[in-house]
Image (cartoon, rainbow, N blue to C red):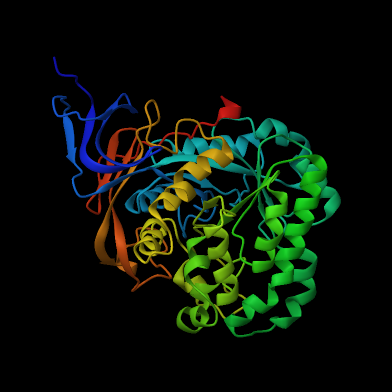
Length: 443
């Protein structure tokens, strides 16, 4: 008697914990139910994956979807639509909105706003601020919370933790891993005169220089070790930080972005102007090469897009009044698959950095691998497909990408979340039904 499932992916090359295996995958009740030769099994939905690679669902652990308060740039609907169009199955949204996500009430409001509007699974960071330090242990335990985000450099509202005493207090308040933006605010204020009154956008990397990043990262690591708090250092950009971080593997994990792995000064600023402006900045090839060495040597734990959209009108303001940030969630997969095609990144390492790594770092329950009982989240890709990334393809409300014109090799063909097809062949399918990401420590 044949077995019946809800969905079967047939004949794809699956990235499993045992390696790349050409096999069938079956789904029942939103979870992976069988792996192997399923030619006699039946299902109402059967997907022919022959010639394609079936990867664990990609998790983007750093996005800014701008809701509430900044919906003219992005919202939870448009941001998550861009995610699934790019093959991303789960995202962690940042707290620097208006109002900031610093209370149980503001977190609950975001969770409500995401219901029946988020195309992919989602979790939300709570921002650390002077006024909520004592509440952080409670806030980080709430359903739908990715953890605590710390801004050591300029951010919105009260989301700035710039002095060591406050930083140590935040780190001592709670248990889950803190995600940290490491730029030294006192040094940024000291050096603001370099760009005050107008400067070429290429001066962005001079103002927010290497020492600005290294100083903050060193302070964070020493304080985190002192209070024995796990930290995740976001969007690392410098060779000096990559040399420092291996000595702190007992408490610190490391993220880089596709932008910092792909773009470099001065070319990026010459071609893109303020569209290349982000924090920390795009730096020169010396630093970019150091990021790649850290990936090759195992020093990088995950890749996040730091998707941070602004309108083109906002970006067109004269520097330094132009805002920092660029969209990235929709382009993460094709950009990285192009590095795979070029031999700079193995497919195994891609999976580790975008699926298994985030699940391991943040204690995500049921995601990050193709294995029995895990969520049936799949990023199905054609490694040989050649496509051109264009602004027209971007579904983010901002409507642009710094990779307009980029010739990609490797492309997301389908996005499957909880056993449900939500994107195929460049088209959204059905209605948004994303759920809250679950974490081991909050179950």
